[in-house]
Image 1 (cartoon, rainbow, N blue to C red):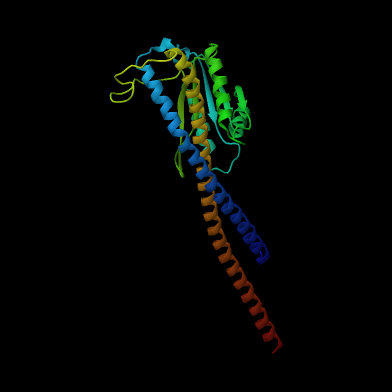
Image 2 (image 1 turned 120 degrees about the vertical axis):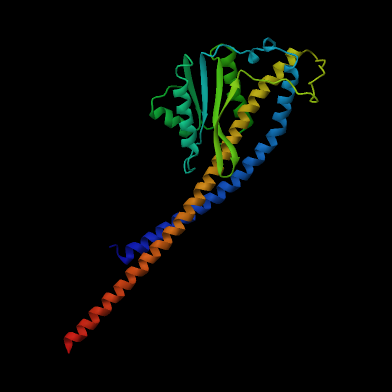
Length: 289
């Protein structure tokens, strides 16, 4: 049975841990709010680009631009987005399990599947399993900027245009709520567009393009790719902070419950010690009679 000193020391240790997890929860909550604001700010611009592309696609075919052309997918790339840090519950394990499932389910479908990682946890995971990667993007989440997303998109676009890849997929945790994230795979390349609906700009009326439709596509498509990567990164960041906030809240609650049990154990041990001392005193007094 542990001594009173041991129990008291453990209570102090758990209480210190509880203070840390409580502080981490508050930090994660603040970062989550900022990440959600960034997602909301990016949405209107991305939606307008998609709307413009859909309007152009109504009167254009795949031959209008190489990034719209669908080839027989033989060589594909999966870009896996994880976090740099842990203590985020099942945030990383869920997306990495989805990556393993994608590789297993499609190993006979494609001639080659290559993997790139964004985030230290994903990089360490594939290295530990000797999975060959085309590229590891370090430090993206240390200071997340649109320029980093644009650089990644440009690199993937160049590989696609050089005929090194036939398709590119993004795998990330889609933010649903502060306590819910869903591993999601999105096809980044080739770019998929849908004809505009009736009543939507471009649904019934074609436009005059200056200088021409091809020049507009040359400008819009790279921006669209960059925004898709940017939105996926923002979703991943928001999901990470939400998962960490939930994990730290659970850890704080569990610490409180453990402290309660340890206090009960301490009081019982103290009572037993006092009872033992009293019995020894009584026994000594009886012996002196």
